Length: 168
Ligand code: ADP
Image (cartoon, rainbow, N blue to C red; front, side, top):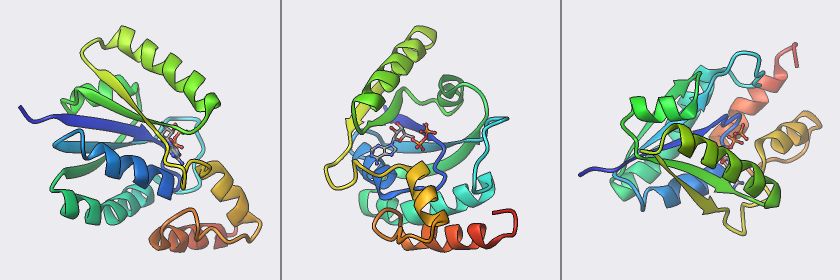
């Protein structure tokens, strides 16, 4: 039976940290759905449409290389509901440090209580990318720093355009 994984996040913007988790998650599933959270009241720098297009673009080589189907979709409610809608039996989350660990394990357990049919799988961040956080990438970019070490070229271009807008 084909296994589907659901990897939820803000991806605002997608980073090399996310891509590391995505590439490694393809070893566990036949199909991977990337859930772009679009929750009310949660302000994002990049509109959902842009985050989706970007994710589709930067994950295409991973899908081609591994043969795993990668689908990008938005969700605005509970991650477990979105995972169920996509018939995913596995929820993928990344763990960078002990802060992630405490939060992610608690959330995984609460999700497990609500949806015992979905197993959360935690992937420890790789050493080269474990320090990367989208929130810090945004701060660095706003201050004119070099973010090329943290996010792919396509994402840098989108970030530059978003920050050039008068509202930012
Ligand atoms: P949010 O923090 O808003 O949930 P993110 O898109 O930043 O959304 O994170 C989604 C998932 O990706 C989380 O499980 C997070 O721990 C993981 N993640 C983010 N950055 C990294 C990274 N550099 N390495 C490994 N996992 C990461």
